[in-house]
Length: 432
Image (cartoon, rainbow, N blue to C red; front, side, top):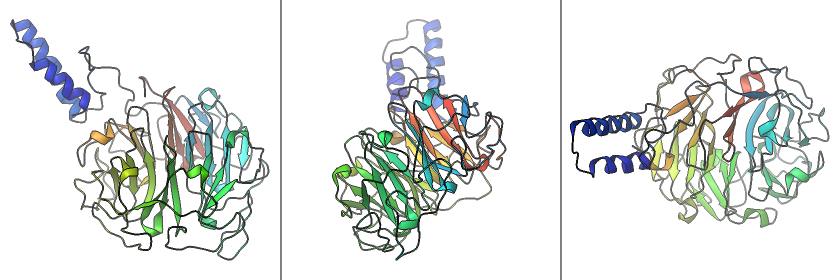
């Protein structure tokens, strides 16, 4: 039961019931609140006593627009152009509505200005990682090779901070690249900074230190300037304080998943990880880490204040912090097979892109959920048990490798990698 639901139930019991009609009405509201807490997919009851609010999301709802395809019911044509994707992946949107889409198959990041009002199949407004919209050159990718200061190899994640600085993971060159004020950059502009390598042309390879990565995967930023980096094969998440001011090759300031910066063991406990793949942080500074091999999302409350190797406080996708198994062919309201990407809106709703089960799980008030709690809604599928469909429909996604939300407008973007497109959804209620 959510915080809002608890508050309303308490108010129901406080007054003295004076007649049968009033008693029946109060009982009905109480039952509605209880049903919502049992995973019925509704938003919390209105705190002011006005009954149930309109749910922000509805299971199986249709997208309102699409990028990369001619309609919400069509597959993208693919190709390296200004309006198509070869293989869309990670997503990030700024408060002002600038959307960045990682096009994995073309080793580039496309920028869409005012994305919340873009028409279906609209063209991108800018590109980074390539010199123009028709180039798809792979950037190095082997230890000892020379990287390019503007090029991207094997990217898996991106994030934009509150100042508009863009961070992009470059697993092929074992680094995280930073473009300052990215929306103002010319096409093909060089990055302004790098983590994981000494400079923008080096590719020394992987390592297990406070300065190097093994397989960099996902990134997230928060309002206070922290950058969180998923170092997948080191089974850890690194924290950089005041990240935009860091010099090239700066050391991380903290680590979760490992007791120190020089260990990379795996585990299924509250303080260990196994192949983390995604990361997100909410407005309260709570960190969410998705693990592919443990099939779960760890929640670290007030994460920036945690000591190195600190234990997670909660878990979703598993009943407890020491379980990491899943039945691969069964989709439920509580399990998560492949948490490939995540985002959190202004109300603390967590969106988990379950890339293996081809769906996005929505957890209202995620930080207050009990361990193993049910998701409230599923998007990209008609039900929680529909996990295999990948066809191009307005209500369906296949291999959602990215998800991002603009809380002020209620716009949610989901990558549909299987169909080479990005779908846009509209919330029916405020997200902040």
